[in-house]
Amino acid sequence: MNMLKLPIYLDHNATTPCDPRVVEAMVPYFTNAFGNAASRNHPFGWQAEEAVDIAREQVAKLIGADPKEIIFTSGATEGDNLAIKGVYEMYASKGNHIITCNIEHKAVLDTCRHLEKEGAEITYLNVKPNGLIDLAQLEAAIKPSTILIAIMYANNEIGTVMPIPEISAIARTHGVLVFTDGVQAVGKIPVDVKNDGIDLMAFTAHKMYGPKGVGALYVRRKNPRVKVTAQIDGGGHERGMRSGTLNVPGIVGFGKACEICMQEMEADAKRIGLLRDKLENALLKIEESYLNGDKESRLPHVSNISFKYVEGEGLMMGFNKNIALSSGSACTSASLEPSYVLKALGLGDDLAHSSLRFGLGRFTTEEQIDYTIEQVTNTVNKLREMSPLWEMFKEGIDINTIEWAHH
Amino acid sequence: MAYSEKVIDHYQHPKNVGTLDKSKNNVGTGLVGAPECGDVMRLQIEVDEATGVIRDAKFKTFGCGSAIASSSLATEWLKGKSVEDAVKIDNMTIVEELNLPPVKIHCSVLAEDAIKAAINDYRKKNGLEELQFEESAIH
View (cartoon, rainbow over the protein chains, first blue to last red):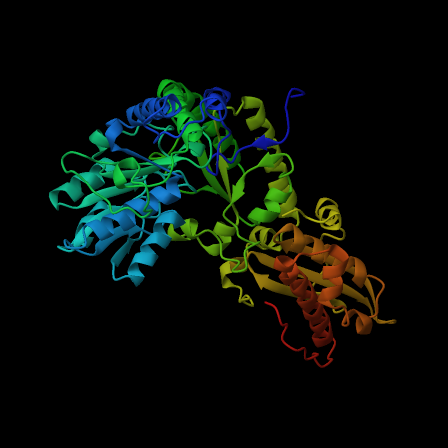
């Protein structure tokens, strides 16, 4: 235990550290090989272009795509915007209806809200209590004007993995395109755009041990050939779909990160999954603690747990100098609204306010997990001694029968 | 957002956590907030009936660090004060003492409300008229 270096990072769904091998690959492209990949007439440009081509292959390979199907972006938020707005504009003559769900990332939800103002009709499917969508409900929502289904591959808060192959099979029979936000899944679990029947997918480097500020949008070129209307106009880079000088060092790092994931993902997932299970099993032994989201169809490195009768932010304060993680509570936001994802699962506000998200990663160790189990358990116990709700629970009083003065 | 040292100190070493016997006539209990809002505070006072001075004060709080610190501080301030003076505790003095940022002012409001609710509970038990307070501005 004396080898333990603090603070510990368990917030890998927010971002990941760059793998040192990624940084090493990037460094030359800041200084010596600084060329603009669009400079066609000199060696500096050729060098940059070649580096981008290699990276494009590495990125494409990880998701089973053709390199020509990769559009580099600044990240997944841009990819989400380009895919949804781009399809909406490109396929306007076909229809204006988009189906999504209520636990999508804000980059998808807010893009849909934006399009609603421009005349789009959006269906926001409710997820089941386990965080997965109901396929029958999805199919029933499709109508002649439906042009796109936008469902995330894996959820960022609870880690649940959506049935993407089944979703795209349904979409295909109705001639509807499928877009998925693959941010949390790509590089963590096998994602294959061909097998999964995905038409468009946004993902980003910094969630898979690559640098921030670079991502990609996969756009299918065959069966069917998909097109999106550019959202950024300019020099016509990325086959006209995304103008702007390419972030060569970032793209090189992204490529390297994909290559490493390709080689190590399986072993990483196995090792991290065991650590996650150890953590989860220990924490679920605490009285009145509950796992949020489906236990089976889930990413191997995520666990979201509610500790009833203690408040998430107060709980984190017990150890957040030493352990970095996230809470579904939003005591700092002006609205005081807890996580919309947890509420969409049907959790009461009290349980949503009591949740912690543990996101393990490539460099997480067993010592870190042991320390985390100890710290979280101790803090939950300490705060429950201080919690009037815990006292009521122990006295057999149902807190739902109390008339609270609502704020 | 970093917490102030005083908030951290109250969080790590909360003063007067506990429960007083609410069946006693000289104990007043205030329970404010709601689980849905992420804050519930229970504050209790025990009054010396001969002198009208608050002899003991206890709290239990479900909430963030600032809510715990606000209620811990409130119990410290209540002890030894007369009921009359206790009514005058203003949430802004809690804000100043703990250096609470704007997003945490509601925690101090909750503590002020808890004090008033506890005093009114005590007054009611002892046949006194409940005091009327203006609605708190920030909820």
